Length: 309
Image (cartoon, rainbow, N blue to C red; front, side):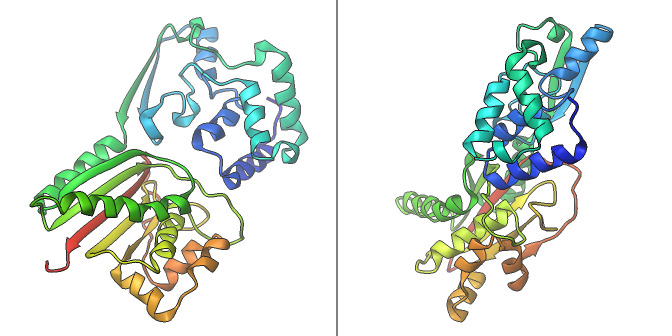
């Protein structure tokens, strides 16, 4: 497409701030690229009919091949119409550059511009292999925790939705787990693990990221509540940097919660300005590693220890 890098960056920024899911964002990306959405396979087949082998590290919920890196070697299940509908759903269609809008409108009228679908012959010699995913990362974590004497419950590999809302629901997930464990003789220390990719709808001009926003949502909900265990919660983006911050995520525990209550910190104000990183700098629990070079999803871990431990 005859679209400048600057115009693509504008579209990407609008999408990231809109609250759209990664699947919805990739629906747009596929239809603004000569390579994504199966177009790489199409180009190679057209030029040489060569065999294409893709070695893939998954960073998406459910390891969906057509979503990972926008599926350059995978049949696309979305259309130009889907792309336009996503932009209209989040009220950004009228905000995108004219070059992008023109290309999308041309795609609606010309089937030749559409991404290749499952019956396209260009996929005849394509082989896709996932060699790394969040599943393998979680298996390593569970093995380590088992050695440390923790029981572990991997409660979800499909965390999606608004980060703040999930943070608030995390209390209910923890409470339900504690209730179930109270019925039998279980370990005095255990772990809950969840993976996926949450989203943030940008309202303010602060600095933060989805995991930090999620943890802040949890703390805001917890101001009037208690957990009868010592707890430590990690929320991290495994590629090492999230949002517009330099942090990969943050930690919260009983100490941070007590700081909020004791000093009457207005957590709501940080949330409304999407300024979660500023908060975690304030309480000194942000996690800064720099880029890891390997992203396999977001990672949420809750460590719970009986208060007598």
